[in-house]
Image (cartoon, rainbow, N blue to C red; front, top):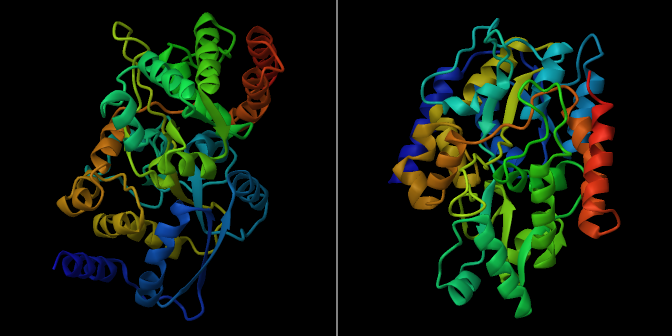
Length: 395
């Protein structure tokens, strides 16, 4: 019965957004490969039928998605109409004329969209360029059987507790904590919750100074290396598999990765430490190319993709909506109880700096971070040299 209601609601939503377009009109989407693209693709056929159009799409890795969008923006008429975007690309793409101003086209946010998730898609004047489609935010993955065995079923409440439990497991031949492999966005983003917990960050508040070579960053990196010694270093797919199959116990992850069990990222180093917002936003947004030749149809698709009922229907396919009504719906929580954890994290997370040089910054610092973890560079040298290299990127 519930499935029927969802399907009926989706059909009603389609009726709201249907319009007759010229036969043969084609909308082209460029998407981030993975769960983020899969959930959106599920909604495409119904939109095509209701709007008498065809939708084509390409699925790209993180780096290729950024590169292809940037390169296509120089063309008078773009190859892409609807873009899937990382939140850190907002400043770069809005300032360089890559993105259409959706406010100018009449788009507005409604009160159901989690307010904190909209910030990365809006400029200083309140103009909307990107819409929060997939509520990616860091979560803490764990293996329930190992937590039951080694800590009476309790996930430690502090980072110190996580390290102590990891060391206990490692002494027994089990990888306690897994770091994410991959220099650049993968390893830097994996490090950010620990850095934040220790009171550090990558840039100061107005983004004018790099803050990697600080006492807080040094303490965080030394702690991060201790976590590695109590566990392992794996790529995304293998780290999720390790936690799920019980060859490892804990790791930072994301809702769409398919972890069997997860909870919130811990906010304190110790019981008496200051609490920090350690959940890192990694939401995937939708936007429109400024050089799109099909702006009317593209806007209609964006409105459709963000519709509450369409968003609700994505949950069954692995979607993580940025809408309160969709995340906390009874049907959503019955299917995925941990969405309550995601809702809390989405309401109180920390954005990675929305500056045009952030992508270059993580690609620059990633190798230094990797070298420190591998032991081929001292912590002091990695932070000092990483700081200097990133300072060269400042405008």
